[in-house]
Length: 512
Image (cartoon, rainbow, N blue to C red; front, side):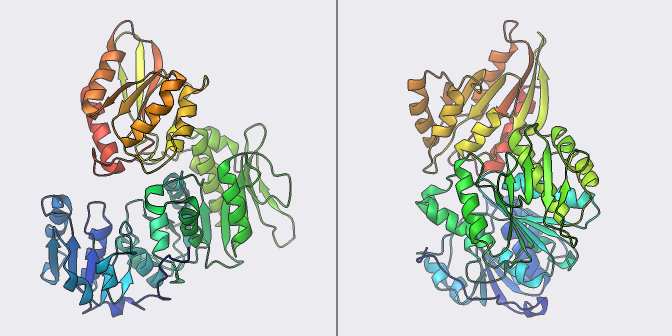
């Protein structure tokens, strides 16, 4: 990664008082909250803000309406440049707040900026809160959500932000040295921290690593190099939680590398009890019980939480389906234990964790009047083939899978294998059109896997699915309809969150 951009050490702002009177350009007003939160934050602290976006005003109506309807904001200090970027707004700004979805390399506007910061870098520099940082390819949002849920219900005043569509600038002033902040960080957000030295999480969690964003990175090595930044500035008083190299997965190889490289104290999560070393971390026993084992106490004895302590009872009673969700909850239990939550308290709390929107989210139930009942799950945040394959293994009832979308230069073989296996093959498969779907179809045809579609319209797909499930001859009993695309939402939806929201709205109307 010698060609990756390295930012200057530290942050342009040393305190909140530094912001007043500064000329700030927010690059990317957007619709997901990050740009809007930055505008609000800098206006709140007395800056003159230019918000610029290549989207038009018509496309940004929800964000613009939110800002315009807030009487607490001094909009006289806000200037909007929409539908374009102007070079002068970058060259003349005291600082530019960069959108993580914009590459620095080759960008003339960012090259003209005197100072580049992000909402994450500003937060990390100005807040004293202990940080729990979570990254990975699969499970990072659910893990971050479960940690925040667990800490909040264990009595901590916890905050959750980052890639989960909540900017930490929206709650910075409410944090202090005793308020743990859980940050979900994408590889792009981490790349924007390279060289700054501001990210030193008390606990860094790396969930499963699988190929993703290869249309951006071009290689796994470049992608993973950004993930490694999550622990780059840790020390031995910090914890790095990653997958055990003893797991029988491709991702486990990366976990072993992370554990060896981190300057922090490595803790591993595993599918089975560890065979070597002290085995500190979290794992599942042969009977499926979850175990949390912390580093030694002052007496020198490891603290093991099992059976009647943290573990399997909570995970067996999770409200969200799937073994991969149990892994996310187990990692949440490990972090809660590191922060001092009692094991029995942790078990009871995580049993009530509802999961999060767009991640195997149960939201609707429908009966056809002939003895069939279908539960609907929104897993729109499954944007890689491996995530859709994991959704197939999460259910024990007949499953009707909706998947497909645009490609990110990924390998669809893992999903094709799952769809053609005797154990995981769904009762029916429904495909949305897209370049990723084309790659998947090419793998399914020689395997003899039949599918409905591809459809250019999600509404049309759902209407035909209702017809298939409605008749008296349709299969009876409990069934599940799962929307787990395994691909991106480009060309048909604004993003995966919009895709999930549209899916839920259509299902509630069509399957009323």
